[in-house]
Length: 219
Image (tube, rainbow, N blue to C red; front, top):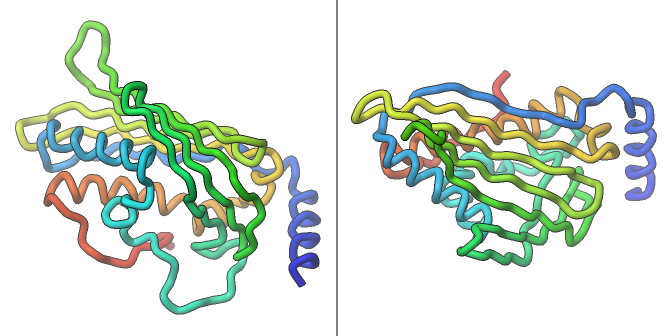
């Protein structure tokens, strides 16, 4: 059965090899009702935990992204069609670089094992200006399944209690995996997660916590 599933997916991918973009992204401009100092603290916390201890993110930044409690049949358009399982972790605090070993699961099948996600974090500002501050975490992957990604949060104060935010989260899939990512798969399985991360970061900055609530792809 597993072999049939894999062959079916490969056949489906081959039909759309040149029709699917490799790079996908979420770009959002919004306002956080919290001081810049607090928003920056939350952005730094997210990047550090993403690099050094990604499992910690499930207690706040990834809330609402858990698999459904009731098991349903997985399809390529399911909210949990693609899952990452974190394994070994290495982090260098001096250079702010990290390396996480992970497995990639597609439709409940462990397709790729022991992939390496390397990351580097940089906080920057313009040469002749104090703002905006930019939190930028770049990611690279071993093998050809994924080519890279970026987390960017550009922040500048509007007032003592408000921060303007420009947010980007993008990922470049390898040529093979990109054929699996239709627009609907991207929307249902991945895009809403990047949107949820920003919602949770802002909620944490504004209230100091992230409440439990179910989130999923918006219709």
